[in-house]
Image (tube, rainbow, N blue to C red; front, top):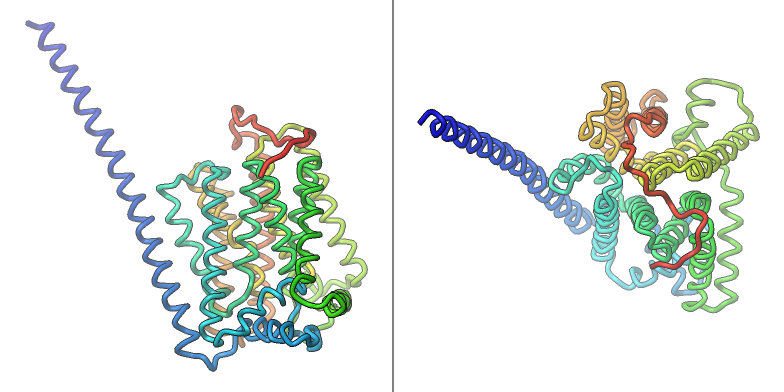
Length: 428
């Protein structure tokens, strides 16, 4: 009898423990689904408002006006690069915006905003599916999308191309992880045709996977250069390429008026820090930091860092470099850095990283949110300390990333899968 009672008590205890575990799991799943539903609702509401604004405030100027005008010039065979601070993208993008010139402005703007938002969200979804950021699971990804909203809606509202660029970069990084080299090369080439500096992403991928990626990337760049010749006379396209190269080569934004200065490392050094660094020395700093980044990626790839570790380091560090040391960093350009900040912060808490790393991630995010609020609600408030929040945020994320990727204790020993840097092969 005593033995029967003992077994009965054990069974009852096991049943209670199992029920408690199931209840805990159900509770966590419910909380996660709440975050995901909240993200769906928040993004839906935000997009509805953003899509209605071109209809309700059609007189309001946005960046899309410049894009649509470039498309109109393309259709008429007119010069695209004739205005200072006008259209700065490649002839491919002028040809891309030509159909938008045939559509009423508000409707065309709505389509462009949808494309921007779709690319950004698709890039984030693709990156999450790779599980590179191992602590961010599908059911809890909703909080990440919620945190992305305050950093993204300003760009979408002003019809900037930065969300599209950020989405293309994330799609390329996800494709590299899955060894879909053609897709990665095409995504980086498209991003480069929008903003020149995403070519840095492609060059770093060439460093970590030279044989599989380099020739594909060169072909993709050649294709995006040749496509405009299919839609206009070759002599006109050639003239526009010459004008584009000339305007980009002469665009020294360090000489711009104070209210339009690039918000990058130069801004912190020269305008905030008042350090007498000549422009040529700063150019050396830009190129030197790019070389250090390339050497780091190459060395750690050869050393055998895991695939996820290499790609996270590449993604975060190149995002920081493009904004801090890129050629034309505006306030809205920091949209390119937003995914790295949000992913890093959520990862920091999901994987129980040390308090110091969590504090750095929060600080980088908070500075970006404060800067986005300034640009949206008080755009004419431009003291140097307020404008410096975004580049300082980049520096904070740099410290966080270096501490994270070089801390062996934060990378499990069984994560041994490496990039095929020295092997040849094919893949979409």
